[in-house]
Amino acid sequence: EAESRVINFGAGPSALPDPVLEEAAKGLLNFNNTGIGIAEISHRSKMLIRDQLRVPPTHSILFLQGGGTAQFSAVVLNMLARHRLLYPDLPDEERVMDYVLTGSWSKAAVQEAARLANGTTVNIAADARTLSPDGKSFDRVPPHDAYKFSENPALIYYCENETVSGVEFSHNEKDPESFPFELLPQNTLLPLVADYSSSFMSRPIPRLADHAIIYAGAQKNLGPAGLTIVIVRQDCIVDVDAAAKLGAIPVPIGLSYKIYAEKQNMPNTPPVFAIYVTGLVLKRNAELGGLAYYEAANKRKQEKLYEVLREGEQKGVLRPFVRPGSGSWMNVVFEVLGEGAEARFLTGAEANGMKGLKGHRSVGGIRVSLYNAVTEEQVDKVVAYIRKFIAETQS
Ligand code: PLP
Image (tube, rainbow, N blue to C red):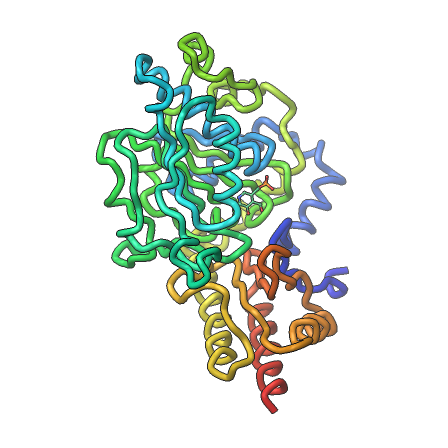
C-alpha cells in the first residue's frame, strides 16, 4: 500500500515514517505477545526523549493529554500557584505574566492567560505585529531591543515556532532573531515557558536547562495526536492545593503537574496508542542518529525550499510571507502572485501527488510543512515542482 500514499506537506497531524506505521501495524496485531505493559513503554519513551534532547536531571518529563491547548491553561495555573507559594503577600495586580507575541498560537496563549488571570496582570513583552509594514502581520521575530520584560514575572512565555505564519526563532545566539535569553531577569530559577508544539525534536533546544516548562503535542514530529509531552523543571512542580489555600486559582487534576509527576502515578488512562507509536518513532530516531541527524536533514530541507522561494521572488512569481532570518524550518509560508495563480499551483501539486499545501485560512497562500517524517527526496520533489511552476509562469 505504501506506493499509493501521497506526499503529505500538511501542518499536522502530520505523516509518520512508513517503517513506523508498518511496525505499529504488526504491533497492534501482536501487542500482547511483547509482554510489555504500557507503563513500561511510557517510561522507555521518556528515557529516549531525555537521551535525545539531553534533558538534565533537574527536569522531569511528563506525559499529559489535551495538547498544546490544555497547556495554554496549565502553564498559567501551575506557574501562578508557584508564584503564590514564593510570594504569598504580593498583591494580585503585581503578579505579572510576560508574553512574547510572534503569531496566532502565542496570541491564543495570551487569550487563555487573560481568561484565567483573575486579577493578575498579562504583559505583552513584545508584539511582532507592530514591526511589520502593515502593523498587523506576524512576519518576523522581534529584534532584541523590542522586548520589555517585567522584573519578577510569574512566567515568561514564547512560542518557538509559529505554525500558521511560519515564524521561528533562529537558534544562532549571535543573531538578532534568536530568543533574547540575555535580556531575561537574571534571577536564579527563570520562569521561562516555551511552546515547542511544532518544532519539538526537529533540532536541539537552546538553553533547555534555563526553561521552566517546555511543552509539545506529539502530533507533528513524533507520533499520533493525543499525547502531550511536558518537560518541567522540578521547582515548577508545586503543591497547587497549598497555593490555592493562599488564594491561588484551584488547579484541575488533569492540569496539575504534581499529580502527574508523582512516582508511578497515573491519574487517568494514558493515550496508549499514541505513546506506543511515539515510542517506535523515538527508537527509530535513535537508530538514525538522534537529533543531530534530524538537525542536519531539516537544515538542508529548509535551505532548498527557501532557495527556490528566493528565485521565485526575484522573478516576481512568489513572495515569502516571513522576513529572511525569521523563517521557520518546519512551516514555510509564501504567496503565489497573480490572479488564479495559487489555485493553479495547488491543482498542479495535487496532480503530482503532493497534498496539504494550502496555507492556513487566516494568512492564506501556501504552507509547506517539513516535519521530520518528510524526507529529503520529497522536498526535492516539491522544490522541482516549484521551480517548474516559476519557469512556466514567467514564460
Ligand atoms: N501551539 C502550536 C505552535 C501549534 O501549532 C498548535 C497546533 O497546531 C497548538 C499550540 C495547539 O495544539 P493542540 O492542537 O495540540 O491543542
